[in-house]
Image 1 (cartoon, rainbow, N blue to C red):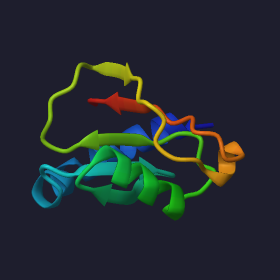
Image 2 (image 1 turned 180 degrees about the horizontal axis):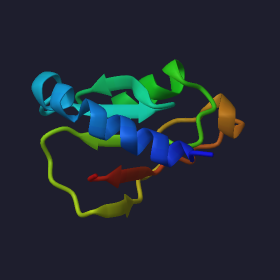
Image 3 (image 1 turned 45 degrees about the horizontal axis):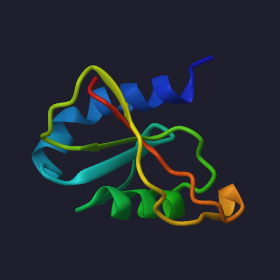
Length: 98
């Protein structure tokens, strides 16, 4: 069985050309093997992703055109409460350059 992270990484690879062409300079969230949100900021993109795919435990959020180390987890200060966290602010960013 394929993990959700692997599914999202595969989707990123398959969508890379489209992302570079259509989303350069924007943040994009990939969840459930598809693009679920994009925005001008990380916070905006996370909020849209939560609305588009609520309760998703794994997503990739990255800024298209930026270079990141092979695998980086970067902590983020709390952004906003969500229903899936019982109103607690618990978001952090996971960036993967695949």
